[in-house]
Length: 356
Image 1 (cartoon, rainbow, N blue to C red):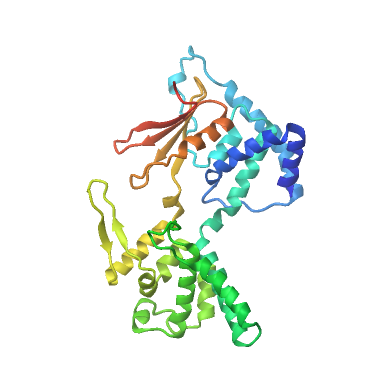
Image 2: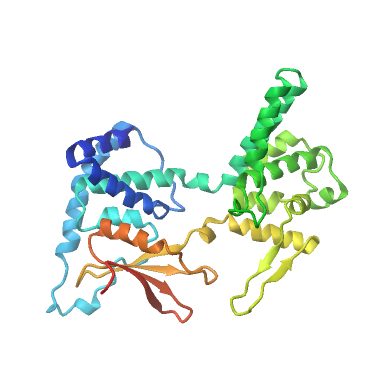
């Protein structure tokens, strides 16, 4: 409510277009407005308003203090000064909010609002498979239970099943609709399989899941939902049967070789490798590019330098140029994006505005 009211006031005072442009740039950087380890406690709307008033005055004083200490060329201590920031900063929106030299107070507050929203939703990104699986599992289970007890008609259940199967369908790799593994399909398959392992375990299930085979399925599902996120859930509960049903295997893609190698097939060793590989795909540190604020040129053109550290040699996509434009709008001066190399150096891969 505080955010909605504040943004409405900004639109009335500064114009809808100015606010929308600012929000567009903030939203383009939402994934880089997160503290991955700190979890601030929620506060009331009254406390938020009180803090906002005090924060506005303090922030502007800090910005003025930072930029008025820029040394002159004659300053003999220029070379002794540390790089700013002293250590890389992964929360780019936080850095913009605190240090962007040209943002007005209302703009800083909107940056902060977007950053807080991004922080709030960050944990949900870690449980997408589990949330979608939980929802579709209970949707399917409850409606079928109602049909079995004559509480809904056959026409009703057929409509439900048509909708359900469309949601949990996994397109083939060569389908025009393929976009990776469908989280609904994987989550539903795993939730359903956990119930099967508890109610009707096979010898293979008892070997792989001795702790839950034959146990109470409802208690097991609740324990999984309460104690795991996608990465650890897959690592713990992905069964050989689900791997076979979804036809999962792993490929070794070595950039130095002209071919792909099938690394894991459907045997005991392969099942474990598939588990580990699929689990790693849901580790957010592997999914989201590692881009951090590396340096601000306080002594010159005030340019902001970011540095990208590739994961397994994967380059950034073409969208980096558009994202850099949004960051340039927020920072107000040149923005440079570098990529680290194996030798410990870095090469420039994007800049806004582009050099002629």
